[in-house]
Image 1 (spheres, rainbow, N blue to C red):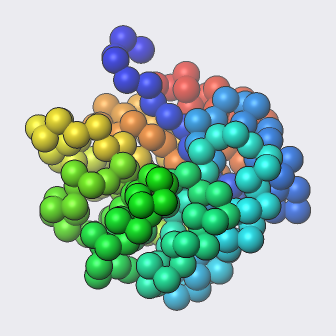
Image 2 (image 1 turned 120 degrees about the vertical axis):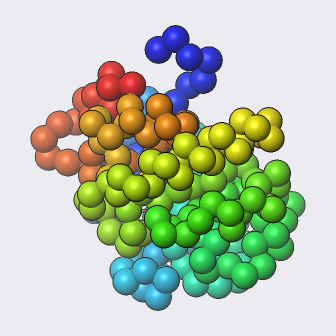
Length: 222
Ligand code: DX5
Ligand code: ZN
């Protein structure tokens, strides 16, 4: 790749084997991942209940990689401190769940943790424009959040390109992460549109290949 940026891979452990999560995280680290993406769901903002702060704390000793915690929960402000204490390196809250986004971002950054805002496929990027300079990361959902293994929503590609243009125009180095339906077919297209961090669950954790082979396949596609 002749470009001046490195694309980061953030395997989402939602599709990992929860019965041996520590080993899966260690293997993912050894396989050359850049972040460990952790999907926290509360059964309200999205239908499933998945992982809470105690599980994040349990994972922490298994990797030196940044823990990229994606909070798909209502009223995330009230939970932020728990995830900071658990050892999160990046905490991302959904704009749709958070009316006081500036305050939430401030709380995260005051703890020297990186702050991200996530945007559902049908939410405009205009909603984060005012807070953009304070963000370390914007996470564009490329599926409706809630489950792994869904199909990439093509229409979000335009939003990736729009946000990339805004970040470049404002000279911001805020990371642009995409999440949902990312595999070796989709990866080069989202990167061309401007994504620089790829969260991928079912394309990394599956019975067809090892984690290392799966990451290699995505890297080779870029
Ligand atoms: C979706 C989650 C994703 C999920 C992605 O709600 O935020 O991180 O794990 O899974 P795949 O890559 O299988 O779409
Ligand atoms: Zn996620």
